[in-house]
Image (cartoon, rainbow, N blue to C red; front, side, top):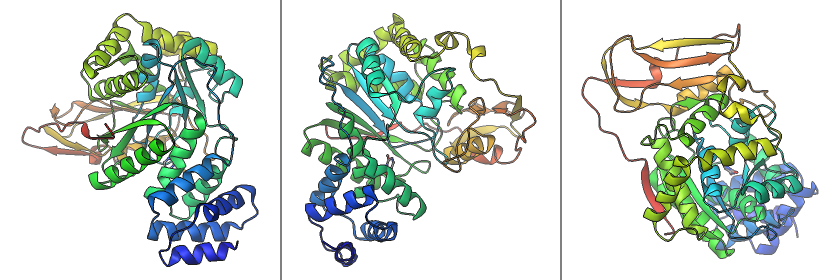
Length: 434
Ligand code: URA
């Protein structure tokens, strides 16, 4: 088999066989094929697409490039959640402990943030001492003892994805439905969960900008998951404004803990987290109806068992569980600056992408994979779409490094302020695979 022929076939819009796809993925992972040829094929796939059969074969080849986690020693259906990435998305910190407290084991591998979007691993890393890269034995112990495990992806899970994702990142070939599908689903299938709820983000601050694109990606991932025997469903959720008030790692831990304490229960962040958790409970067999599942979610907040599960997970994995009750134990910023309104009006839109980039510039996110984060810094957004504001109201609190430059430009520009009152759009745009 020659890689040249695969590139040529795809360049003309032809289909690759499962054997050809396996040959490419294996060669990319073990370094026997030059990166230039993989990059050329990736670009051809971006332009020409892949059939469902090809996407399935690519997912399978990537899954089988590494190890598959065996969770069979943990009783019950194991349920995972995956979000396609946004700004201020700390739902995993909220729903993981809730689902576990309600009796369903929740094994989760998470990513680090890149660019303007945050990553769950970085948020958990803001809890002092918490180990965010668990070995297989530690991951299983956490799942067995607390029903919740969260870790950065280990190097031996879908290594072909690591290699190909790095190439996609530098060749402008990330945005491709089959490539995203295979990248996400290969890791999820290797992770060993029986069921998966997808949160496909849609809007100007997400990868998928339009409902059509989000729908196609969601359906593609649902099809691949089902073909491999996984229970899977997807919610398409709006991603224009940041999710919740906090952007930045320690700040997002605080906001998640406040929700587990029962605060901000009617916020969009809480409602979205509760709904995703409820879907996970249904898929895990703990509830039959959405109403019943949402009731269980509420009970786990009210009786404190969800927060207690998070405390136990943190303590078991070396973290300072007291920091969840005493936020002064979390990383503290060097300086705090307020940004105030320069006029009266109503908030019509909040540019989550712009705020994500401002938070990244403060040190909360990575411009480059090797950047070192400051886990204390970030932005607290005090307004939401629909908020009435008056001149001099505090709109943002900016948490920055000591002596670091606090950019003054960009904050007010991230808000669209109008004179008339504004209605709020529903966060849930569509469901797929129900
Ligand atoms: N997240 C992934 O893991 N892979 C992609 O291709 C895009 C988002």
